[in-house]
Length: 127
Image (cartoon, rainbow, N blue to C red; front, side, top):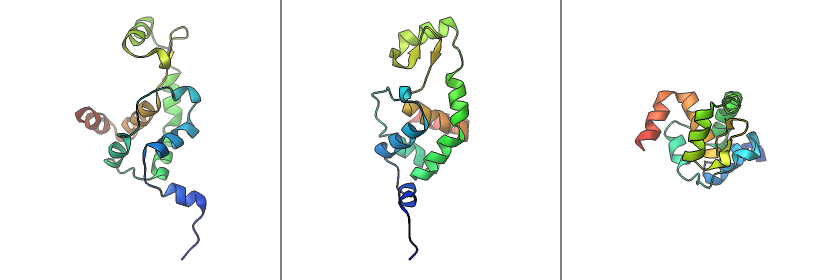
């Protein structure tokens, strides 16, 4: 039997909420970790699109990291910023700069939509 290193063991581990948090936390800023929402439903959503291991998720998030960060750096219009401040918790909104950022579940779902297109968005809406 061939030796399997620690990194390979971690990469082949199946996804759960703890591992999803670990992967996303290492790739994105601390300010994105503000949501109180749990990540419990994400493993089944990711599994429906063939993302079953930690390595699969890490590669997906690394592939779309730049476009997700660019999306967060886009300045919102005044009306969008006001609407967001009224609709959602202000933890993910900088009203002064006119920018908002995704929480960890939003980052994963946005990456899924970028990778799989409208199919991921429709699948998530049906659930």
